[in-house]
Image 1 (cartoon, protein in one colour):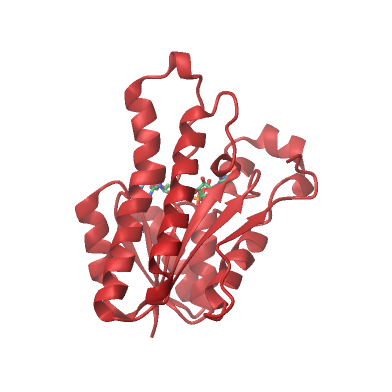
Image 2 (image 1 turned 30 degrees about the vertical axis):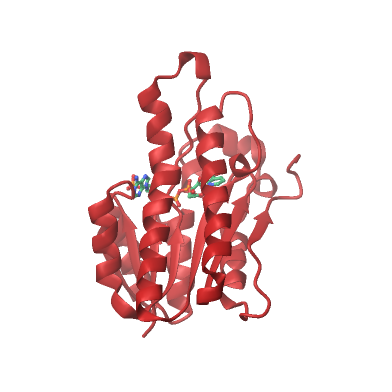
Length: 239
Ligand SMILES: NC(=O)c1ccc[n+]([C@@H]2O[C@H](COP(=O)([O-])OP(=O)(O)OC[C@H]3O[C@@H](n4cnc5c(N)ncnc54)[C@H](OP(=O)(O)O)[C@@H]3O)[C@@H](O)[C@H]2O)c1
């Protein structure tokens, strides 16, 4: 059975958990990774109750040894690796500490480097290809007032992903980036900021299934028709 790793898995109605469910449905054994065992267990239970196969692996994406252990766990059957970790870090530059700025970069960019490096190392050592996908945001493509830390770290992740896509294509490793351009209609916004969700309405939030469709499309592309990047937004989004 082929395996998939998804890093940055949190609540059931979130993108990480939805990606886990999507690829388990497609017959992969999914290793769901995040920092909180109880959240990961719920994701695994839902997949198993629907006939899929999954396991939880607690790891902080900024921890090099934990990331290596995550890939050790997947072993040689790894086919798909998704770096979904990346929290928003709002704040004005003039009031921001260097620690806050650095932490944003660690989570969005350094973690993506550690994760991507392990994936390509393992696939190259085994002499077979694989698919490595990164979750982007509006922040990946443009700077915006009050979001400088997040914009710079997501932008750096995108450039890293593009460099890796060029560096490892000839090894049969497909690397892609999905720009999620706007608020996701998931737990973080619907439960976390309900007044904002209400203002946006269903039509103003990006559908989780629509996003996982984009990841699935990239994963299934044949070697002679690869896409690096897809963007997903609602019809209401100003961009
Ligand atoms: N939410 C949105 O509206 C939105 C919009 C555009 C793009 N995005 C992008 O979509 C991705 C997913 O965001 P989401 O908001 O939907 O969250 P999600 O996929 O529902 O959950 C992501 C989970 O990652 C875990 N995480 C955070 N820091 C981590 C770390 N250092 N190591 C390992 N796991 C960590 C958190 O759970 P624990 O705290 O339990 O570890 C978090 O709940 C992110 O890359 C984000 O930038 C989100």
